[in-house]
Amino acid sequence: MAGLLEGILTSPVGRKVAAKAGLAEPPRLRRGRVLPAGPVALASLPGGGIAAEVLDAVGVSPAEPLLDLPGNRTDDEKGRPQPPRYENRPGALVIDATGVREIAQLELLRQVLRPVMKGLEKSGRVIILATEADAVDGLEAKAVAQGIDGIMRTVGKELRGGSTANLVLLAEGVQASDLVSTMSFLLEGRSAFVSGQVWRVAPAKTPVEGAASDKPFADRVVVVTGAARGIGAAIARTFHRDGAKLVVVDIPAAGESLAQVANELKGSALQLDITAPDAGSRIADHVARVHGPEARIWAMVHNAGITRDKMLANLDEKVWASVLDVNLAAEMRINEVLLDHDRPGALAEDGRIVGIASTSGWAGNKGQTNYAASKAGVMGLVWAMRDELADSLVTTNGVAPGFIETEMTGKIPYVQREVFRRTNSLSQGGQPVDVAETIAYLCDPASSGVDGQVIRVCGQNLIGR
Image (cartoon, rainbow, N blue to C red; front, side, top):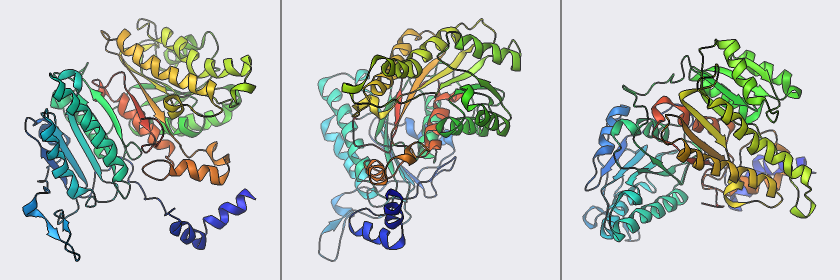
């Protein structure tokens, strides 16, 4: 019956009916290492200037933005004043608001934003750079910093055609070179399903000279758990595209699928239950055996995870413990072993650790108390490790996927699945590659200024922040 309903609603007639009911076909998103087709407009507000340097380093020559001022407006057929229109639809608007400190200056953001709200090309970008509240002095400046956050989130919900809005907060001492990887990620199609997000960039722990590379992981070892299928396989493929030497890990029951992924990517497969007490040691030993005793892991991606959904009233201690062990405790045990940098096959001294959280960890979800606890725990672990490893060159970050189209979500009843798809600003589910691209950005050698961040890959899901 569910399949019949889906067939009807996805037929040409069904699509027309759905459109009339307000369920229009979602926009097609620009993905991959692809810059916008249209010009990138840059609005450098008073006190700014770093964005121009960043765009130059990315290889983008910015265009002048249009301003919504009384003298620039035209009347429509009903005599209503309209904002000025771009002759060529811009592919992105970058706003350098790093010097904005006064409430009155927020009007400047309105002036540059209004012309692009209906003027961006499809899959366009609005990127705002600002100074984080902790780095500015005075009550008004701190309030204004938070006000910019509210502007960005609302813009993300009002944009059309698959366009996104994001805010990057700069810590004290950040240089243009520290922002190149973040600006490239946000402009390119790699950030297709990242919208309405705020994260912070600090001075790079390990500065990288030169332009951004399309093979940032060349000759670097990357370990991905839960890599036999779905999001894990997409993560492995994305790192392979960017030059990595892959070690893919999954449980023995998934051995055949895991071997196929490893063969496809010319990597090595390790059949392993990550909850085993010696899982960390076995990962390090495998890396040392395959790549040599001097080899070190550049990026450890903790993708493996399970769900055992039950209402809390029906949730016993065994089901509770199994989810927390796989999704959280195993990650902690493995990290403890791999952070012994002197051990053959362990994490590099300037390596990357990425955990997988979830929007359920942000907002909770009915029937997922154990899962939400484990994923909120991953976020807490990321933040705690940022502080614990503050004097280290290692960075620890996380991603929190929303509704991602996988084999597992494909089994959800159609109507329920469609609701999940529609409850974000992009009106669709994400793809496994969207999660993979964000993880690869966090692991880029040029992203060492991004530490202790959890980025939601959810199309600006309407639940949580």
